[in-house]
Length: 432
Ligand SMILES: Cc1cc2nc3c(=O)[nH]c(=O)nc-3n(C[C@H](O)[C@H](O)[C@H](O)COP(=O)(O)OP(=O)(O)OC[C@H]3O[C@@H](n4cnc5c(N)ncnc54)[C@H](O)[C@@H]3O)c2cc1C
Picture 1 (cartoon, protein in one colour):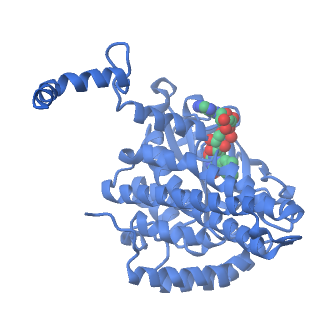
Picture 2 (cartoon, rainbow, N blue to C red):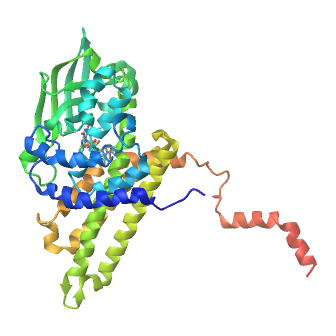
Picture 3 (cartoon, rainbow, N blue to C red):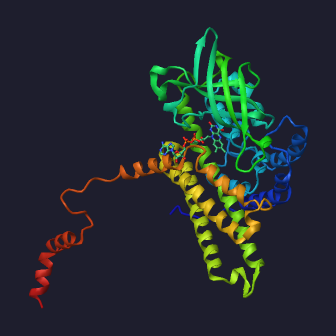
């Protein structure tokens, strides 16, 4: 029997340390105007460095990576338990060296990069010295590679890149960009695209504007509309070889999606805690909000949804550890991806509602959390695409029924049962 819902005591002690550290030392940073990805900013470095050193000293730095890359190689189940604690805070992933998109970029550089690419781009990324950007989505066609038009053409010892990318997160802080571009239009989207590494500041690379989320002030926008106008990059800046972009993108997203889900458990739990605190604190004429049955139902429903989702995430993490092949767990990851925004939005909306006017105001974090839920329904592909992918996989395991009636049709089953046991039934009647 392999089912076990307990955390081993050693690891639990580590988790307890992380929990207290994030709550007391990291969460307060979320209230400062500085951005953790702004590594060129001396104030940000001064805030990050001492905390990162403590995390390193405890062996908790970049735990999504194996020991060869400076991580603990914990595997996905332990990572899930750790990440759900980090999900409470916007700064925590940067303090623990596992922030997206750098984590995914580091993984593909480690896996597909040349020795030179790893030395120049991966090393400082792993050390938390720089920020990177992943530019795949295009403004006219979303993230469907079949619709991409950004083109790279070989010219001597360089690739020349032309086109536009949309919602490239943290481009304004990035030292380099990993850009997906068509390099062989005749080969189709799955073999005709390549990943190019473009250093920031390369001539012709322009941030048209930085787009913000929800009610963020204009200047706070961190998701870039990018333009490439004859941007030249050396020929050796292709990642993983020509035509490999689609395969690399798939590899990158498998891990990224489940890590977002682990952190979402933490964010949803933070909203749930606020809801429960409000329920027992706020008085009505007849008693506290928590004494009202509809409030109790909101609490119970939220608890159930959150625990169901957490178990789905942990089970998927366990499957990834077991198979060590994201393709075999694609359906499970798709299910997690679809459930993630629903559960977060559902818990946050109830928490927001129970806080009344304060809940919808900018004095509580719920509006930003609702936007975060919607972001999770879009980033790394819209929910519909994942729902379709899951359903197709599930349905592939079923055969059409022969004949008119479904296999669950009771009269047909009853007749078959009678025929099967006819001899015994006759024998029983004869002996009566
Ligand atoms: C906060 C945030 C950060 C992001 N960061 C990055 C990043 O760093 N790099 C990057 O490359 N991209 C990034 N993205 C982009 C993200 O991948 C896209 O938003 C997403 O793939 C959807 O593309 P779109 O926004 O153009 O929406 P559209 O493609 O216009 O889709 C809009 C809606 O149409 C429907 N739809 C679209 N396609 C289908 C389909 N095939 N089947 C069924 N329904 C469909 C869905 O309802 C979908 O929500 C980020 C997005 C957000 C919100």
